[in-house]
Length: 79
Image 1 (cartoon, helix red, strand yellow):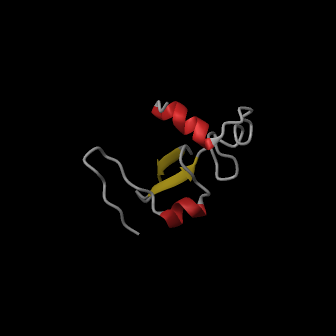
Image 2: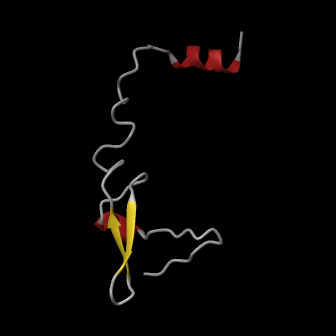
């Protein structure tokens, strides 16, 4: 697999690699160079994972019972 580096030095980690390492947005990544000069990527401990994302704790917790039409009227400023 190959990818291209942007002018800002950013690269996209291919989906097959992200899946193999169980990576999701917000995961910390650790880079290392081995004795042969190969770059090795490790999933570092820490932030979000596929099993519990940052929204999971808030999901289903809202106690305001808005009706869609009422909310749209409020947001649009319709009278």
